[in-house]
Length: 343
Image (tube, rainbow, N blue to C red; front, side, top):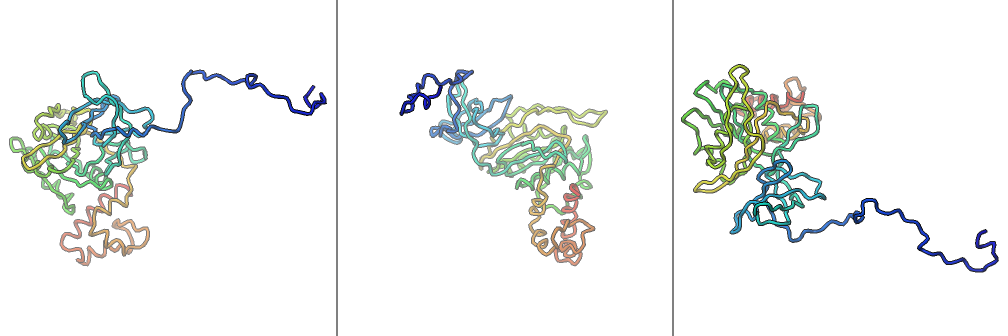
């Protein structure tokens, strides 16, 4: 019988104790979207990442500069990478057994990425906030691969990073023929040979910059890092005489402070790779790296590929007419070599 059938005028009072509530099976507090502000967090630089632990430099260039170990906060979705500026809380003493907690990743100025292959749009972040890329290539043993260098350059241009090229082992082979592939590109080129490593010249170019070192396995990248930063003590390997391939000796990306009398910088050593996927690249950024050609490209028809068979391409016409100067055809050839990767 319901209450309205009893003849009573008023609705009965309900007892809240009769309401059944399913208990929290985990026995913990309910989740909330409100996140702590961490106003007491300190800024730190990520020097390296190893199995979920972050090596951080706290109070960079300050009186209390020191290194600590930290983990990533559970609420932080973005994974910090080497070169990141982060906010960290917790035990920041750096004492043995202590652990801080990374709660924020600060805005990045650049992001160098690669994908597994050209069809994979999922990016693998290599380093953050680098403004230079030192691309190390051997003149021989292993043989230089122009297409791999092209891919590194494309990734650098896409990220807004200035490239530098270093050719090692020039005592084994003349690099001039290889360098002709990049005649139209305007970036510094250094050569190195046994007993004559250009440490001073390259070192001067690193001051005031955060430079990421990249290259094929076995080209002498770690040897160059050790010459520039003796305290790095990066492992060095050799090239297999049968396969001609280098052995991976650097297994992680690590930042080292580079110090000279006139100033300091950061050297970021990365593991050697044999392939470099570009599935994540925006091809428009490649043309932006050729600022002189980008101006001419504004006269191109919509959707112009700028490749040799492109009809009415203003860049091709300007190169043929001499509008771009003596180096114009070489610049166009370099641009087309990079764009062909995506054709």
